Image (cartoon, rainbow, N blue to C red; front, side, top):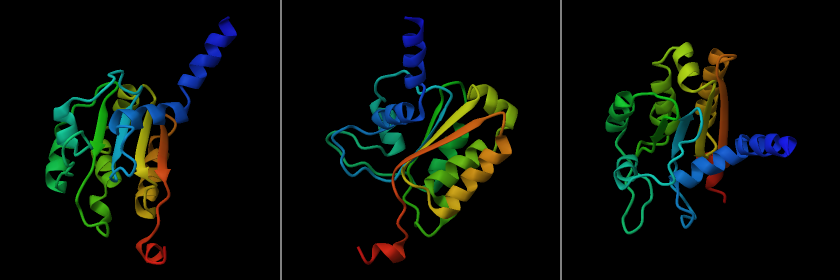
Length: 176
């Protein structure tokens, strides 16, 4: 019985299960082509079953009966800066910025917010782990930033990355 309990705990703790739980929290199952967004969960995935309507509106997430509009980069940066990082904190970013402006990508803005914290405090708040979720695979510039962030915070913080769809550069997308 003890072995089964440990096995179940390991499965619940797996990256795949945690990423799926985070995606389910952010995006309703009925949404087939979600907008590009990125999120960071510090420590365990929040236990709440659903997000509030105010959170969905503020974060530009899809919600029933309305159009989801992403935030302007300036208001997104202000909201992220105002967010207090506590165990189980969830940071979500979705922006309208020009895709060519890599400094305003969702992933870049989340990393900018996380970089304001010391590695020690992030490790403590994140209970040693941080799950970075992005609907699309981060572009090469953002992937490089994530890798640098992970290397800088290793071994104090385990940085995990999960995404659903591959990044397709605009040049290649024209031929699809």
